[in-house]
Image (cartoon, rainbow, N blue to C red; front, top):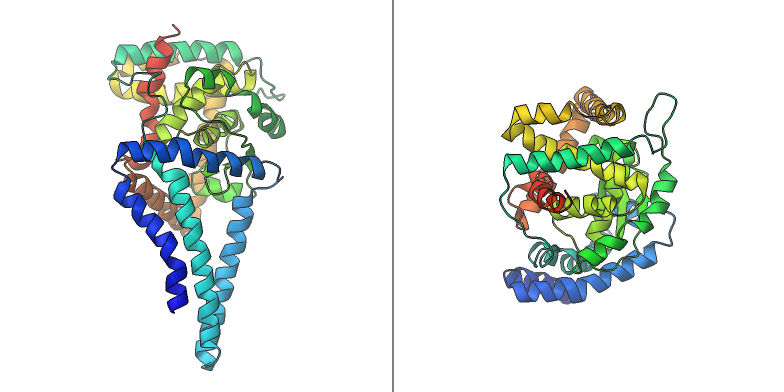
Length: 363
């Protein structure tokens, strides 16, 4: 027991230090830009050579190991022998997880409390419905002009290959790095998730895992939005911890990438977020602008809505899966709220003001 406590002491102290210091901006800034960025870069560089998601593979292995250890403990208790050995093995597992958690805390959580990554390059401010309408028109027109330049199948549906999207991701952030110097370097590459169907059922399109530096994407999600999703997860690897920031940087990077498939996908994401905001602020302006969506843009937006509607139908037919999906979403929402994002999962949509201010510079 004493050895177990001694081994747990370092990660416990690291976690405690974070929660004591997280309100100190200078400390969080230093940790985020000088310490965490080194871990993210190194981990992302090393795991980029793996053709699979280490997060997904290791997570599965750890889950199976935990199940085996718990079963062994139950059997030992039932037989009334070997209990100490089973507890010791379970304790070793807990120690490994504790060290991993401590590294994750300092590798990613400071980003929620440090200066926003757009600081010094973009002013966040209140915006009007008229400004949102102008930005939406800007992205709509770009989307319309690009929609016929991406690969499509015989039915006119978006048909770019996933492998090409992943390969082209290396070209996306060049100009954005110059515009926003607080973005850190990254060698991470998007990774296909084997559990993409499960990701869809839990309503997630991707996940960045700071411990392995991997940007994992759900390859079952609507294809036209996949480049944007890849750019969003890569934004996390470059220092945009908050979800609204990651959404904003994903769009900005896509539109300045000179990679058509990414430019188009970024525009689709932008019109989705801005359209939702304008519909709440001025439904008539929303109707007028969206009436100008091109045929392919309408097709891709409809395909996305249809996909997620089908997912909800599947979940409704499987109560256990639906309950699991709700639990995952509630847990993630609580995680975001616990780390300073008071709107939880709704914070994804808070990129509207950033997108609008950025777009108005280009109109």
